[in-house]
Length: 200
Image (cartoon, rainbow, N blue to C red):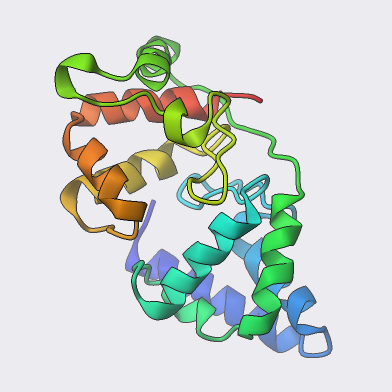
């Protein structure tokens, strides 16, 4: 669930963690802040929050930069990233990139099977390319495209719908926006279900 009250609570918890950790070095403090929402090793237990474990450090840095500049919008991250020292963001990104992603549980196997077909083959009739052509056949991603394997289905679906509506537009060359606009909400949900159970 994503609500103003939940966002205020999460942000308040982050600020409290910052206050309690003033003796820590900036990278250590940043990791404490990140752990509040994304888990100590980047494996989020909150479906609305992405898992960061195993993400490419370059990709994570680009997202942090986009949050800092306002290019990518988030009521929580937009406020948090402004409090972080820029020169210590790289160690944080590298830390999460080195962690092992644990993955999630598929709630709807039948829908996930449809998502698997889209991930591997795309949707010819809608000119939707296979997801692996950018994110890797195992969904591990790289510096340009995020790791999708094991990501929360709720989070993936929400981001895809944001690309579809134009609410999110920090994708490279508008690729995800163009792809998402050619997919139905059911197709997006199917891919999201498949990805949460995808293991490397």
